[in-house]
Length: 288
Image (cartoon, rainbow, N blue to C red; front, side, top):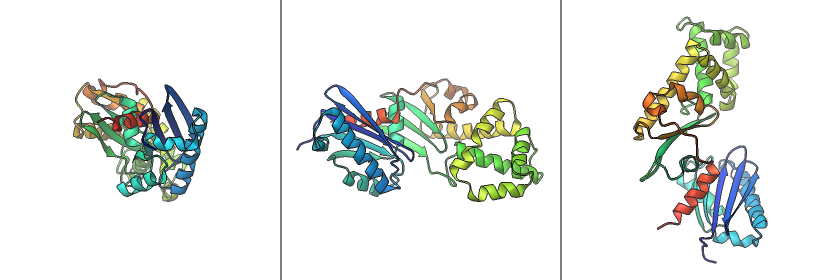
């Protein structure tokens, strides 16, 4: 069977859930399933297999028909070309591109526009799309990356608490409250941090955001620090003042007021989701 330009598949997979969409005969059919992080390979492939079967059934196609589709699969955990090739080899489509979920997020948010995305949730990355393609910075995870993220904000807040305990930083209302939450001693924070995951640290991020808005000096400094990282990434990527910028994720929009005015002037709502982006990229990959 040859590849069919009439069958387009996009897949957006992460550690919590996976979404798949099929464009066929003017229709868009979607399915949602369980986790699909490439680092948990067998689980991810099982989830995707179920979604592809469901798409074919909803579209009224025989199970083997999707082998002729053109597809773009964006999965969390695709860190190397070898991992991308392994995922592609396990999929039934013969014309498939596999990436992590960063390019799909950017393409979905911006459509065909030149612009940038700062995706800031538990983790973080900053990327820019132009006529030369998509380039991404960050996304390396804790402990070595994810600056400005919810996880990094939480971890930095605890660092500031410890510095205040040692008398090297002034306390604020937020640092005193967090210290009290851990029994009023540094030991409680040490014990928490020793086993905390990125998600655990990120539970503190909403408190940092709220406290910064209320004028807490430590929280405001952390938000300014995160915004400085985002701005540095945008500058390195060639982002121009007034160019479209989408702040995404659970923490991303909170940085709007902390960005330099020239960058903030380009803020736009995302056009679509990472699933939309996977479909956009699948279409584009079939163009000469």
